[in-house]
Image (cartoon, rainbow, N blue to C red; front, side):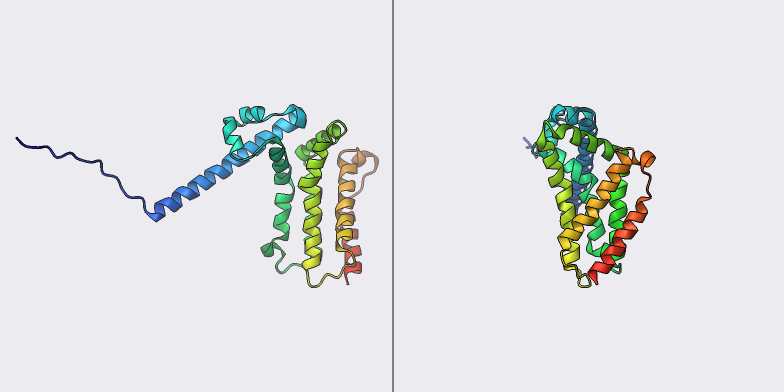
Length: 221
């Protein structure tokens, strides 16, 4: 009687290289899934407003299960904040990165930041989102508070930090000038894009940026 030797399935041990490749693929998959959710959330908030939206509706539009959304965002408030940040501060941070500011004058950085602010408010999706936030702020102050925390406050912080840490900038009140710069451009953008200023009070926004930079140069030397 001969005993048949039981054959075990051959399995290949995963190398560290395999592990790295898998983690990179997972990271890329997770990033794309996050972007997919954020886009679906933006569309949902634009169509239904903050109060009218839900995690279920976002999941349905994104084509994912609700648990997938919760694996990226803890609740609707966090999701809404990330939608706003993705359209504003997350992109603005690149302007002030070490690589971006290297070899550039403060005037060039301010020009890039000013152009970015104007581009945001002229974007139809962002303008519609802003209208939604303003429209709901009376009944739901939390929505406006989330917007301010997610975009205006960190935006002022970014510019103030740049002023404070740059060795060649000598402003008497860096935060005040950051508020003047950002506030002036936000007012111009809202007046032109939301309040029909392009028809009633047309004004080339590039002129405003140039004048603000001229004032900055005078004040910082």
